[in-house]
Every structure is written in C-alpha cells, then in structure tokens.
Length: 138
Image (cartoon, rainbow, N blue to C red; front, side):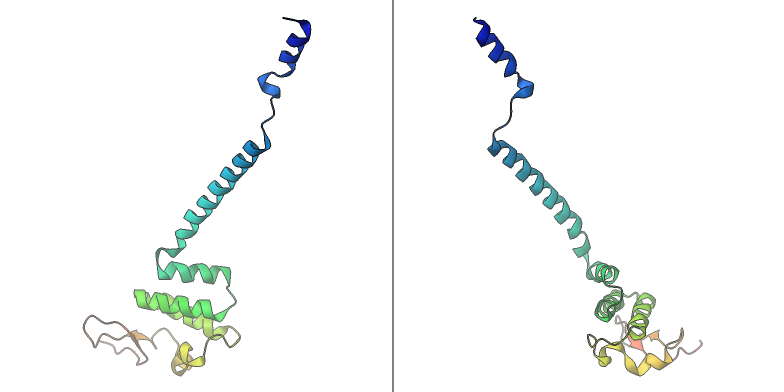
C-alpha cells in the first residue's frame, strides 16, 4: 500500500468516525421517547383512584378551595370520614374565591364542627353518610 493510503486509514480509525446527522437525531428521539414513557408511567400511578387524584391536586394547589373540597368528598366516599372532615375544615378556613359554592361546604354544620359534631349515619344498612346530630353515648 502506498504511504498516502496508510495515512488515510489511520485518520479514519473507528474512534474518529462521526455518525451521520440522521443517526444522531434517531438516538435523541429514542431518548426523548424513553423519557416521556417513564414520565407517563409515573403519572399513571396518580390515577389509580379518585382519592389519589385529588390528593395530588391538594399537594399541587394547597391554597385553593376546590381541590380540598373534592379531596374531602373522595375521602368521604371511600369511608375516611375523619380525614374528609379535616379537608372540609380546610375549605372553610381558606379565603372564599368563589370556586366552591357555600352549599358544598356543609355550611349548616360549619359553626358546630368539633370532634363530636359529626358522626356516621348508619340508619340505612350498608350505607354510610354524614349526620350533624351529636353522637349519643351508649
């Protein structure tokens, strides 16, 4: 081989070969897709239940009434009455921004919220609900 050909072969060693732009774009696209798939999978965990959706909303908007109201409603539906009561108290303590109508904040019982003011209503078999009647000692 001629000296010139040997010199060209040394210059074009595998370490110095530059990938064509289309290959670089393909790798960048694959990395972007993988990142978006990972983010989607992690976000789907939030949507496993209504409670987790509204819990996420409360974490991202702690000073808004609507997320606390809907989180409290979801907790109440799930049977977590004490946690729901805490969320409803938070709704009442936040400034009124017009996002939650007063009828949705259980205004009639707002002045009497204390640990014993709310109890679960078990008058209908299999149904749970709120009762503003004080619990009677057994």
